[in-house]
Amino acid sequence: MNSMDQFLAQIFLVIARIPQSSISTYGDIARMAGYPGYARHVGKALKQLPQDSKLPWYRVINSQGKISLTGDDFSRQRAQLLEDGIEVSASGRISLRTYRWDPGKSEQ
Image (cartoon, rainbow, N blue to C red; front, side, top):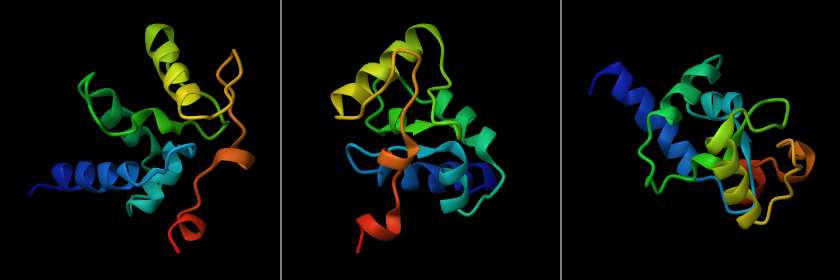
Protein backbone atom coordinates (compact mmCIF):
# COMPACT_ATOMS: atom_id res chain seq x y z
CA MET A 1 0.00 0.00 0.00
CA ASN A 2 1.50 3.37 -0.94
CA SER A 3 1.55 6.27 1.48
CA MET A 4 -1.43 8.03 -0.13
CA ASP A 5 -3.55 4.87 0.08
CA GLN A 6 -2.47 4.46 3.71
CA PHE A 7 -3.43 8.07 4.45
CA LEU A 8 -6.86 7.65 2.85
CA ALA A 9 -7.46 4.36 4.64
CA GLN A 10 -6.65 5.92 8.03
CA ILE A 11 -8.78 9.02 7.35
CA PHE A 12 -11.77 6.97 6.21
CA LEU A 13 -11.49 4.62 9.21
CA VAL A 14 -11.71 7.56 11.60
CA ILE A 15 -14.62 9.18 9.74
CA ALA A 16 -16.52 5.88 9.70
CA ARG A 17 -16.43 5.89 13.52
CA ILE A 18 -18.10 9.31 13.99
CA PRO A 19 -21.39 8.44 15.71
CA GLN A 20 -24.79 9.72 14.59
CA SER A 21 -25.64 13.17 15.95
CA SER A 22 -21.95 14.04 16.30
CA ILE A 23 -19.52 16.06 14.19
CA SER A 24 -15.77 16.37 13.92
CA THR A 25 -13.43 18.83 12.24
CA TYR A 26 -11.02 18.24 9.39
CA GLY A 27 -8.17 18.87 11.84
CA ASP A 28 -9.56 16.45 14.44
CA ILE A 29 -9.82 13.72 11.80
CA ALA A 30 -6.26 14.31 10.60
CA ARG A 31 -4.92 14.22 14.17
CA MET A 32 -6.88 11.07 15.14
CA ALA A 33 -5.65 9.34 11.97
CA GLY A 34 -2.04 10.11 12.89
CA TYR A 35 -1.52 13.00 10.48
CA PRO A 36 -1.63 16.22 12.56
CA GLY A 37 -1.54 19.30 10.37
CA TYR A 38 -3.16 17.58 7.39
CA ALA A 39 -6.66 19.07 7.74
CA ARG A 40 -6.71 20.36 4.14
CA HIS A 41 -5.76 16.91 2.87
CA VAL A 42 -8.76 15.46 4.71
CA GLY A 43 -11.00 17.94 2.90
CA LYS A 44 -9.46 17.08 -0.46
CA ALA A 45 -9.92 13.35 0.19
CA LEU A 46 -13.60 13.86 1.05
CA LYS A 47 -14.18 15.88 -2.13
CA GLN A 48 -13.17 12.81 -4.14
CA LEU A 49 -15.73 10.50 -2.55
CA PRO A 50 -18.48 9.26 -4.87
CA GLN A 51 -21.95 10.80 -4.37
CA ASP A 52 -23.34 7.49 -3.08
CA SER A 53 -20.58 6.90 -0.51
CA LYS A 54 -21.79 5.32 2.74
CA LEU A 55 -19.06 7.14 4.69
CA PRO A 56 -20.60 9.83 6.95
CA TRP A 57 -18.52 12.57 5.24
CA TYR A 58 -21.17 15.15 6.12
CA ARG A 59 -20.25 14.88 9.82
CA VAL A 60 -16.92 16.65 9.12
CA ILE A 61 -16.89 20.46 9.30
CA ASN A 62 -14.27 23.19 9.64
CA SER A 63 -12.60 24.29 12.88
CA GLN A 64 -14.84 27.38 13.10
CA GLY A 65 -17.86 25.09 13.46
CA LYS A 66 -19.19 25.74 9.97
CA ILE A 67 -19.89 23.83 6.80
CA SER A 68 -17.11 24.70 4.33
CA LEU A 69 -18.94 23.59 1.20
CA THR A 70 -20.94 25.91 -1.06
CA GLY A 71 -23.95 25.68 -3.35
CA ASP A 72 -25.65 22.31 -3.75
CA ASP A 73 -22.95 20.58 -1.69
CA PHE A 74 -23.63 22.97 1.21
CA SER A 75 -27.36 22.24 0.99
CA ARG A 76 -26.77 18.49 0.83
CA GLN A 77 -24.45 18.50 3.85
CA ARG A 78 -26.77 20.74 5.87
CA ALA A 79 -29.79 18.54 5.07
CA GLN A 80 -27.93 15.38 6.10
CA LEU A 81 -26.77 16.95 9.37
CA LEU A 82 -30.31 18.09 10.18
CA GLU A 83 -31.56 14.58 9.40
CA ASP A 84 -28.89 13.28 11.79
CA GLY A 85 -30.38 15.38 14.59
CA ILE A 86 -27.77 18.14 14.56
CA GLU A 87 -28.86 21.78 14.80
CA VAL A 88 -27.41 23.74 11.87
CA SER A 89 -28.03 27.45 11.34
CA ALA A 90 -29.09 28.77 7.94
CA SER A 91 -25.49 29.92 7.42
CA GLY A 92 -24.15 26.44 8.22
CA ARG A 93 -22.94 27.02 11.78
CA ILE A 94 -22.93 24.11 14.24
CA SER A 95 -22.09 24.19 17.95
CA LEU A 96 -18.77 22.40 18.39
CA ARG A 97 -19.32 22.47 22.15
CA THR A 98 -22.59 20.56 21.78
CA TYR A 99 -21.90 18.17 18.92
CA ARG A 100 -18.13 17.63 18.68
CA TRP A 101 -17.22 13.95 18.84
CA ASP A 102 -14.89 12.91 21.64
CA PRO A 103 -13.84 9.30 20.97
CA GLY A 104 -12.58 9.02 24.56
CA LYS A 105 -16.11 9.56 25.90
CA SER A 106 -18.21 7.74 23.31
CA GLU A 107 -16.20 4.52 23.02
CA GLN A 108 -15.55 3.51 26.60
